[in-house]
Each structure stands twice: as C-alpha cells, then as structure tokens.
Amino acid sequence: MPILVTGVAGFIGYHVSMALLARGEEVLGVDVVNDYYDVSLKEARLSILKKQTGFTFYKVDITDIEGMNEVVAEAGELQRVVHLAAQVGVRNSITNPFDYVWANLVGHLSILEICRNQPNFKHLVYASSSSVYGGNTKLPFSVDDPTDLPVSLYAATKKADELMSHCYGHLYGFPQTGLRFFTVYGPWGRPDMAVYIFCKAIFEGRRFPVFNNGDMKRDFTFIDDIVAGVIASLDNPPTSIDKQVPCRLYNIGNHSSEPLMKMIGLIEEALGKKAKIDFKPMQPGDVKESLADIEEIKTDLDYNPTTPIDIGIPKFVEWFKEYEGGLA
Picture (cartoon, one colour):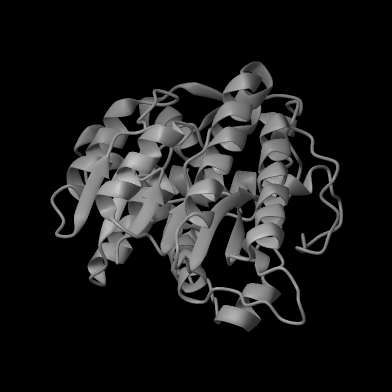
C-alpha cells in the first residue's frame, strides 16, 4: 500500500521519502514546486527521487481538492499519509499573509478530507512547528505548554492546523500525529534558513545581518534525527483510549539549545573563512530562544537524537560546498 508524502520536493519531504523508499515502501510524492526559494534545488531533489524504485511524482497543489482526489483515485486506496507541504518562513508570513492562510489552512483541510474518506485509513502524520510556542519564555518547550499567543502568522496557521486535526479526529476517529519541528538543518536544506544563509554569505565573503545582536539560541536538529522521528511516528499511530480523540502532538528537537554565534563559528571553521557580520535588533515575529522537551516522544517511540551541531554543521558545509561550488 503506497504512502502519500506531500511537499515531497521540500527539504524534509525529500529526506523522509528517501528513507521510506530505502526500506521498500512505495511513495506517492505530491508537490506544487513553487518558487518561494530557488526551484532548481527542489528539482535537484526530485531528480534523485525519480530514479528510485517505488517512487511516483504528481505536480499538484494540495489546495486543489479535485486534483488531489485524482491522485488518490489513480493510486487506489490510501492508508498512510505524511503531510509536509506548507508555506514556510516566519518573516515571510508577515509580508505575504494570504499565501500562508491558503496553503497552510486550506491545504491542511484538503488532506484531512482525503484521509477521512479513505475506507481503511490508518494514520496521518503532519508537520507542525516549534513556532506555535510564540513568545513563551519557559524552557524547555513542552507539548503541554500554552500555545494560544503566536507571534507570527506562520505560527498561527500551524496552531490552527493542530486544532483542525483534533476536530477531525473527534468527528471521524482516524489517528493523527502532529510534529513540532525545531530548527531543522542538514544536506539539501532550505536556502531561506539561517544555517544556509550564513554559510553562503561566509563562503562568498559577503556581510550578512545577525539579529538581536547575535544573542539568540536555537534547538538545531539535524535532518537524520528528524527523519527518524517522522518514521517512528508513522509506524506507531495513536489509539483511542477511554474515548479520547486519537490525536497526539510531539516535539522533535535535539534537546540542546545552542548559541547562534556557536553555529556561525562552526561554519567558519568548516569553511576556513571568517564571517563578516552586521549585528541588528530583533526582527518582528522572531523568538530569542528555543529548546524542545522531547520526553514524550522518547518515552513513546524511543526517539533519541544523535547528531550535535559539532557534527551536523560540518556535514552540512560539506554538502554545501559540493552543491554550490563543486568543492567537496
């Protein structure tokens, strides 16, 4: 039975699909391949996926419910979905709000409708975000913490997705797991993320801004650890106990909040070049620090991240040099 993966040309979607294919699964990949960032990177990921046995790609917008229904009809019955497609980026959501409401709310609703109409559906795993914790100053962030005060529209849409999923779980009873990702990085990463932006600027000898004067910390999570968490979640759907809704939420992070300047220092070391930094005030929608409490996913699924940034950043830089400059 094939697994539907949305956002398959994206960073996490690509890696999750490669891991599923490597263990012999069939993957139906869906992506609209928009130009939020360089389409050539998405196409490069897709070109690798298309060479894999068991992979089928559909260029469809998830908000197009008729188009999505055609994909499902061609595939036959679906029992498992990994929904990773979304309009991403905290800062961009402030300047392009309608893109986020359409892709993240209508798109999520489209997937929920598809899942609830499958006769033997087993599990929907979907991407949420650590941004739902908003300006929370209590660390680490726990899935039980309040998430009703978002500081960006992106965060608000991800919180709304969680609420919509709970509603559908209550109404139709199918299992769902929402995953709050914490600052994902690694090979084939997104060029709008800080690790990629800083690496490219240092590599090219350009000055670049660092916000809040560098006084920020993030729970940087290497892509291999994210994939392990996604697949472990997929393989272990929640069950309804004592009439509870079969929906759960997990943090997926590294459970280590690292200073932004340490991350920059590791890039400098891996590239053998010094950064040229313009320190700036805090940007609207940003948060100073993030740290994931991963106790629940550890206990339930034996999730155990294994890649600190001292190892992960050099791995990213090695890939970056090969992809951007052919220097690896």
